[in-house]
Image (cartoon, rainbow, N blue to C red; front, top):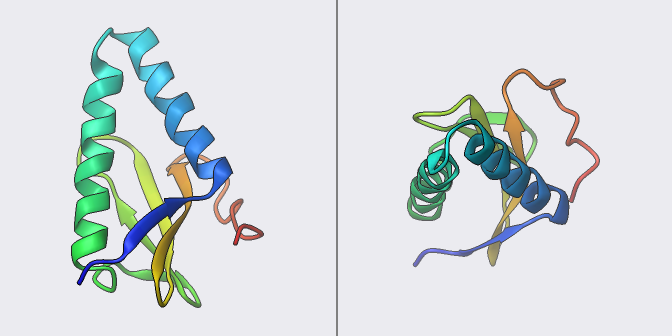
Length: 98
């Protein structure tokens, strides 16, 4: 049984800002980015413990086509996406998120 996936408010903002940025660069590229994220979310739902751990209870999955990493925690009833982090961003900036 796969768990539901919830986005932290800040992660949701990061996701939308990245999609908007890519659309400004090339119309339609934002949708390609969102498709890549959705595939990552599906992998996380199906195999939540497969991605490498980056902190206690926190894992990361690198997107296939874009320089972003999905940072998430696996909880009993839900998978919580803590960040949609650009790989050039300061590491662990998301640490205070629950």
